Length: 78
Image (tube, rainbow, N blue to C red; front, side, top):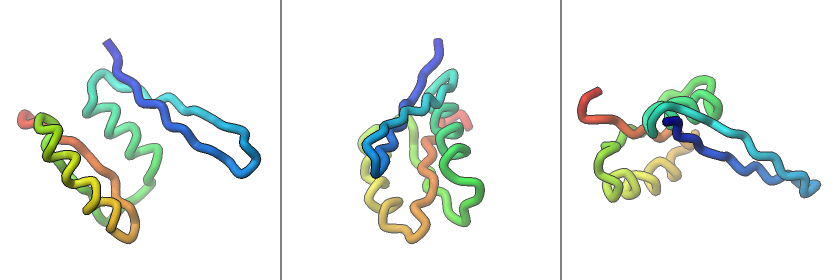
């Protein structure tokens, strides 16, 4: 079973593109999305992948950072 994430990127000319980012689970999808969005990052926001509410609460913090760091859910088995 594969899990995927579709990124919607609107352009100024209204030509919309969708990119599929796949992985075998949500953690792999998050890693693949981060690899696509950032070549390097001095900051990464790590959140517990098992606690949805905790992960959501970290989104405003990540958004306020100057470079908009990657947001990675972590498994308790990592």
